[in-house]
Length: 79
Image 1: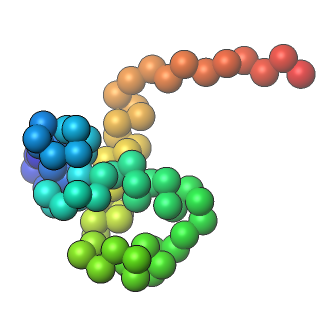
Image 2: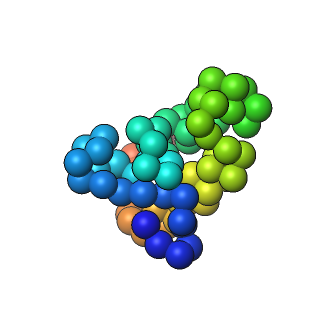
């Protein structure tokens, strides 16, 4: 995709154009969801043998940057 995120690829003909890891059919969102669910890097690497540890770390960095690039609709708490 870019020099900043060389492991992230976006192909409109693959996975609906979702950002993926190195052209694999593994979306960045999948990696982030697995980490959020409590999986460790080692567990993810075991389940997805095509991934490398740097792929996971770059997916997190890419996701953090993506969140910074847009406003997210948040609902105020009414408690």
